[in-house]
Image (tube, rainbow, N blue to C red; front, side):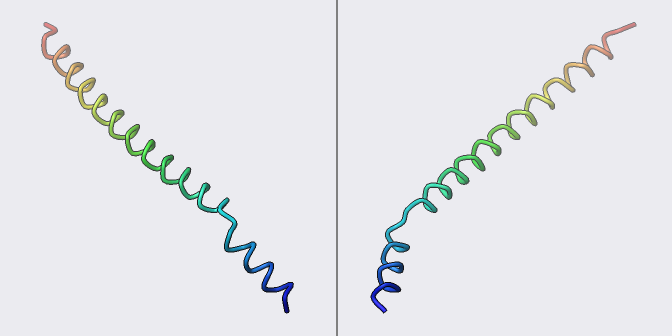
Length: 57
């Protein structure tokens, strides 16, 4: 019975899962920032091409 209690205590003290979760949250935030930046650049580029096209004779 003490062996089970020791394994349970070791499992509860293990923090490696918390590190993986933190990295997952950081990755998700980076992805959101990248998608936002690409979307904004896409809209500006599109409007630039529309302006160029309308300026051509």
